[in-house]
Amino acid sequence: MDPQTASELVKHGVTLLFLDVPQYTLVAIDTQMFSVGPAFKGIKMIPPGIHFVYYSSSSRDGKEFSPIIGFFIDAGPSEVIVRKWDQQKERLVKVSEEEEERYSQAVKNLEFDRQLGPYNLSHYEDWKRLSNFITKSIIERLEPIGGEITVECENEINTPKMPMEKALDKQLKAGNSTTSVGKSQRKGCYYTSIPRVVKCKGISGQELTSLNLDKTQLLETLLAKDYGGSENLLLGELQFAFIAFLMGQSLEAFFQWKSLVSLLFGCTEAPFHTRTQLFTK
Image (cartoon, rainbow, N blue to C red; front, side):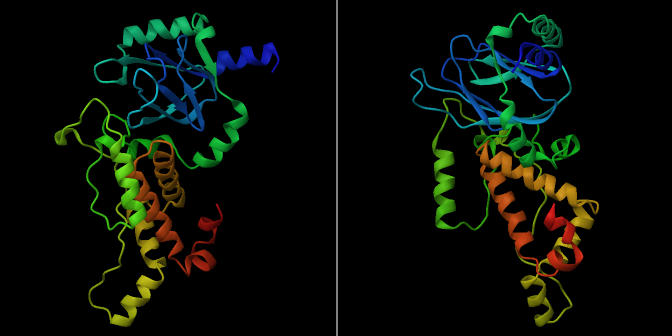
């Protein structure tokens, strides 16, 4: 990349300024992960738009890591997002408006430029394919209170589990951080409830069996009731849950992604007749 192009990206791109992050902490955005070194202060040259930021604190020797904490952002051109490491909570926290303004100006004056790692633009197309249906309104509708997605703060999920899912549950919950989260603080995302079985009164057994074999009617009901008839909102939630699970290691997100995929795969009529476009997007 030539110097002029790089300078334009620094000027118009989004910057994440992370202060006082301990060495060996894993910090990531989208499909890219950084291991924090002594001089690390954040990430620059990020394309404006939707991104998923996530991190995991480390033990002093860098061999053990806490559960991942992640959050979605929708950042505009030249925006600077400032977070500071709270040693006691072992997480990134927001700074005051006055501090944020001061640090933002310092970033724009290139005072932190040498301490910011560049966003790898060659991976940006992969991220866009994963997140192209996620919008600011979808994030605001689904994200938990405070915006942070982490398995250690999620409610217990009473869902029938296969043996591999039970192993995944145990693995994700095993990596306890030094900070504990009380039950009163537990919170999760506001996902749409997807029924596993269709139940209807006043119809024959044959009709009920038919509704459960082909989930097209359930899909239509959910689209009308919970998504305002918008296929893109459903696809946005599917992508949100997939990213929160894949990158944020959220167990709750995994079950939501699985429920939506099972719903779509359970439709016989929709892919070929009523919702062809939904299945080809």
